[in-house]
Image (cartoon, rainbow, N blue to C red; front, side, top):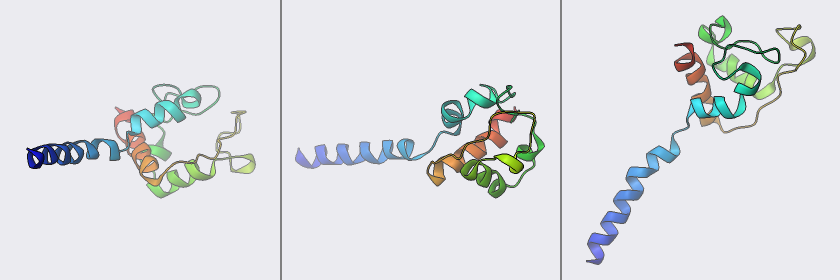
Length: 109
């Protein structure tokens, strides 16, 4: 009986561990980006559109990662008419990768 219980516990941990390890780019976008870039990435007065933005759709993931991590302020701002600076974001690499994947994929649909 102990062997079966231990097997069930280990199996459950193994099965559910994958879902907790995978970052959800859509959720990250909603929590960290949508307030400035809009819930569907269409842009707002505080942040440019992500949806349809060639920098995102055709851009290099490393360049996008750099913007996320370092932000854009002052002379580095791409859209000077937007009064809000892009803040530096701190998050794990897996979250950034998931966010970029979401922005380049599902958000563009």
